[in-house]
Image (cartoon, rainbow, N blue to C red; front, side):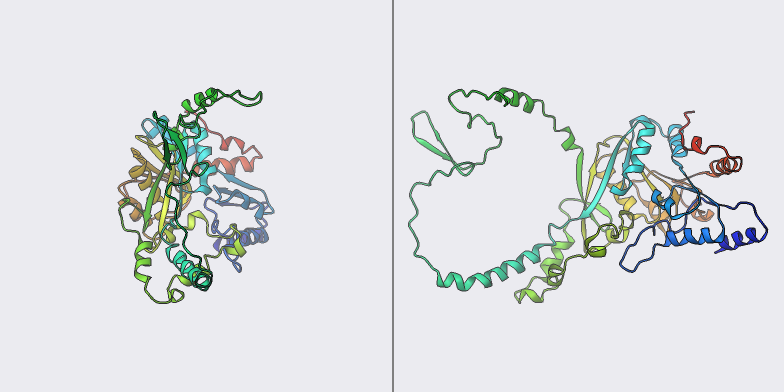
Length: 425
């Protein structure tokens, strides 16, 4: 509102051109509908600026680059990535061996951009609900209902039991296989085949390969050359209340189910309603309006829900740069840091973002996390001095030169493109 009042005052003073400089664009997360009756607040703010008389907008790292289409005037969306990359080259030892990691799937584009600028490897951390124990009640309900439906049919269509053969039949395929020993007596094996081209399944007579098919020897050579290094780069972990737990930690979903299962009618159980009315997606199943990955912090702290967190990438004995556009709530950052340290065995963790919003006591929680070594943000959003002094891990980069140069180039009609380039120094 104060910005709109200032713009109106400039219009009243017959200003030739009004440029709004917004280092942190407010309500940038509300760039799309989150519910059926939700408002697109970022678009509304863009309309207000346009109606007030703004002719040019300069901002830094919009949450979604598509938000530039909300404005009817030119928008310069500057990037703090060159400043962050320069700080990494000057302050991180052995930064060429580091790995850039995204804490959610939505930030992979930003992470790959920084990784390409520094010529580093990149990884990703994804989080999803662990539904291993949540469907237990649902399966019991359907099992009991299925028995109720089939019970009369089984009573009316009983058949006399038939005698089982003394020798088990040899089922084709993987069920059973017949082998002969040295004396010629048959032997039955019901174990599944471990490999489609094992020594047991090879024919005794040589087979001729077709002209278009590869030979068995070529396939075996390809199998010998197979390297499962990529499979080892995927690490899974259990996440309970936003923290990594051991594999033997009791599951909250299992305890909830065990406490709710009784000998009564299964339809009266507490999980019955959630089974017959599963979790709805916003706008009738559309994933566009569902909560974003950066808004899952409240879900991670739910004590009744267990999450499965997956780390893709090799971070062992390396420094890790967890990168996103803003730091608001700490839960997803702490979960990603604990994953790369406790599961991936990373040596050092740097949490990097352009906007340090730090809602509530998030900065204190990040400071208390033992897996986080450095918190790097810019001064696009004001941070109270007393709060910054309590956090020795906090490092704040200055955007004043970047914004001043953008204003100067815009005023004299010069190109803004050099501000997006990485300068090696």
